[in-house]
View: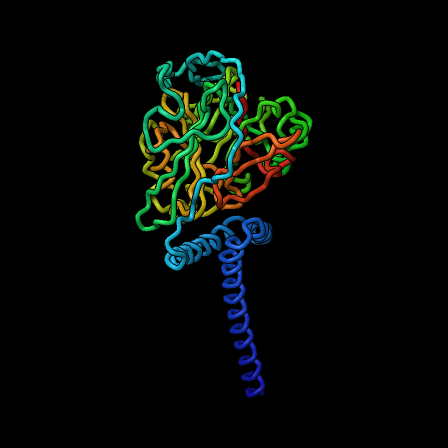
Amino acid sequence: MNRLRGKTKTRSNRGWVYAGIFSIFSFASLIGVLAIVPAVSPSTGAQVADMIRSAAGPQVTANIESVSFWIQDNINQLAYQADGQKPGITLDKQPVAQPTVQSTPVSQPTPQPTQTTNQSTVVAQKPVFQRVAPAPSTNVVTADPQIGWQAYGPNVNGQPAMAQALLNLDPTRPYAGVALVRIDLSMLQLHTEPGFLEPSHATNVVNAIPNLGTIPPADMSHLIAAFNGGFKAVNGKYGMVVDGTTLLTPWPGIATVAIYKDGHVQIGTWGQDLFPGDPNMVALRQNCPPILEAGQIDPRVYVDDASLWGNTIGNQSITWRTGLGITQDGRYLIYAVGNATSVSTLAQALQDAGAYNAMQLDINKHYAHFVTYKPSGNHLTAVQLLDQMENDPTLYLVAHSRDFFYLTTR
């Protein structure tokens, strides 16, 4: 009997050992999949991550992704040496049509940030921005700070409305860079559009915002560019309002880009710079803590605390990242995208580009998009900012599952 019990116990121990080995093998396989598949096919990698997220939850997926990004980073460094030290990020050289689009200039009154107290609206004591009239001789290319801006995209009224530049800020990763697009908001109007799946929304939202994920037909005739939005709703408490309809309730302490009735844009911290109850605010999108405040990099970008950045990877992980900033006078919006970037490097690039306040948007290569639009026959074609971005000529021209921003002439 004792011998039989001993054999049973041995089999049981072996079972636990085999189960442990299987678990380790499965975990290693998941990391391998998330490390290799995105490099070969970013869209497939994103689908695999979503499958794992659905089965195991966002935090488990984030932990696996953090390890896989570390592996990818090491692979990228080896590939850089083996590939003749070619840069890993390059501005797309595909020619973009430069038509002179006519628009009607609109006045931009000085915004007055408001604060809601006991259901009444009061004017805040300290405005976030001090809007000033630009000097006649300056434009989006020649305005300071000068970091190598070049005219980009279609002209508006014979003048460039956007400019692009590329910075290399990480000496340990010479193949890495951050591309920047400076957008003249005196010529272009920012809009935000929810996807037909993200952020998640109630039935009443569908009724209030028809054709989710689609640019309204009225805006298609003067569409200039579009770029990605922020994290999925499952990854954090990030609010979103579109055309006065609340998809996700805004949360205090979160970086927020807001659009107002008169067309001006502000970026700030909800509850500190931007407040509920402002009847002139028609749209907003939140994502993570701020990375730039009043021209200074937020100290939290240097703290290795993944909990600050939602149910996703931490701020120190190296991956594709995107961000959005605005100058102090509110004239220029600045989009940033880096191919092997931490949050601190993203913040540094936006600060160097002249941003006063800034926030992180989405991450991962599959979700990093900035495109301009050029006429192609009787329709438009999307042209990506970077050679390494996924080339989709119909991007944002057909219904999109994730939220995004787009730019039209005023």
